[in-house]
Length: 116
Image (cartoon, rainbow, N blue to C red):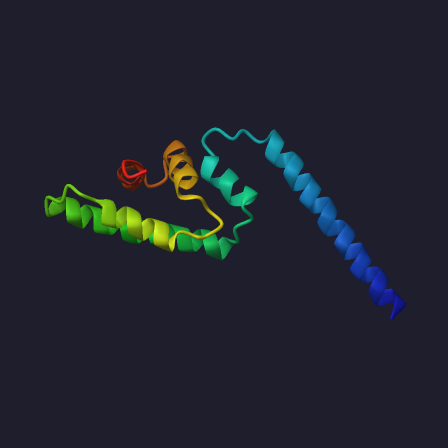
């Protein structure tokens, strides 16, 4: 039983060390052009949560293109859907700005930004 406790303690120390090193690396990394990725790390999103974000953006981008082709000029429903389905760890305004700076889904993000 004592060995198991030591193993758990060792793992916790290693995890704490990795978290500390990650914070240091984040300070060292050039943030320009990586604003969304920085946000992902700062908000501790999992890979699955990021994939869900990409799926949301793909869906909304497709809807935007369809609506644009149909001569829609009012895209607030897309913004509302974005807000409703956005991971609660992310702030909509901060996320939109980060995506624009990183050039992720630029056409969609420009439309969403107009609704901020």
